Image (cartoon, rainbow, N blue to C red):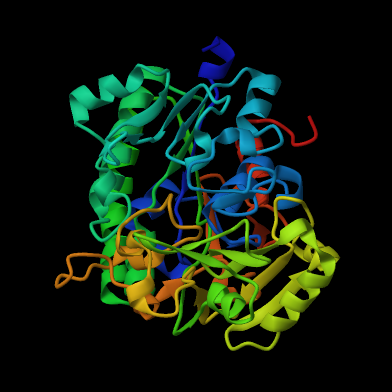
Amino acid sequence: MTEQNASRPAVVLLSIPALAPTDVDRMPHLQRVTSGGCCVPLVPSFPAVTWPVHAAMVTGLSPKDHGVVGNGFFWRAEGRVEMWTAGNEVIAVPQVWDRLRQAAQLRSAVWFPMLAKRSSADYVCMPAPIHNPDGTESLWCYTKPPEYYRELLERLGHFPLQHFWGPLANIKSTAWIVDSAVMAAERFRPDFFFIYLPHLDYAAQRTGPQSPEAATAVGELDQQIGRLAEGLQAAYGGRPITWLVAGEYRIVPVDHVLYPNRLLREAGYLVVRESEQGELLDVGASQAWAMVDHQYSHVFVRDQDPAVARRVAQLFSGEPGVAEVLVGPERAKYGLDCDRAGDVIVISSPNSWQAYYWWLADEKAPAFARTVDIHAKPGYDPVELHFDPVRRAIPIDATLVRGSHGAPAADPSQWTVFLASEASLAPQPTPMSDRGVFGAVLAACGIKEAD
């Protein structure tokens, strides 16, 4: 660290999915670290889901420019679906840590955003379980420097992946992130620290954003923020800290489920193949199939045939729970007119979400449907947050889900919040877009966006 950088405040950005403006009123630790600063509405860009929002925040750009169209990708040339395993190379442009290094030789740490793997940030930690040949997984984390996870392991034990997602998801995973971030600050003292705290996501989707469980989660997270603030203040040894907090997206109540792949199957576009593991989606043989992601889906059409795409769009138009259907150039409305996006984009109304299911009878469901298997499913499955104690498996009942996100944030009930400990960091005009977080980080680090 140069002497000049040591005199700058360290900048800490907390990325907190599902943070509602009313939650802040019940979070005294969060209020304390941002007191005297600003609190303004934040409007997530579409798609309002984890990876595209993270990419928007660290680049200031839309999906067409940064390349992240969802929490998964369909690589057309390979005919391959990739869910939740992509690395930083899918972000097609330089990111905020590149700008900080170039402009002021500032060092950055990125703690748990999923697209951090192989990023150019100086320090990184994110879950990366080892997939063994026998189908089992061994706990592990990707870190930069590579050997750093062994240090974390010695002091903290393995990252509790079972508490990061699925029916056992709880505050233990966020507590481990907090402890490891404090350790990293003690060791590396990064000038910019981007920390992902996922805890509010779980109960809000499982039982609804207004449920007692969701309210309890707010208090649990605030306690961890208090621990983090105390630990980082000690770790930075008196160096001032500028705090930024971005709510990513807002979870809204849902009472309806759309099944795009079932509609496509019944219309003759989607093909399945029988296997010992149940009915499996045959991407290569299907004229069209949907990769669902919370409240929207990418529908991929074989050979990108525009005539088929138009017919598919007509199939969804007017369906209950569907707010918009965009085909071809219409996708430009949300910066999704690019090859990585589906040929048709199906967007839910705020009260509805989309399930990936393609089978028409539960006994035909593939075996992975009843397991927590985020990589095998060609779409996001929040039903994994539930557990059927009778079957000792994940139920096949999409109606269990009570909260969702992802649709365009057209109403303030879909907005989240941005907080900063410095009032001058409130962008004008407000509300701000999640893409504005990029500029706020640069400003907090004393760098003009045009530099």
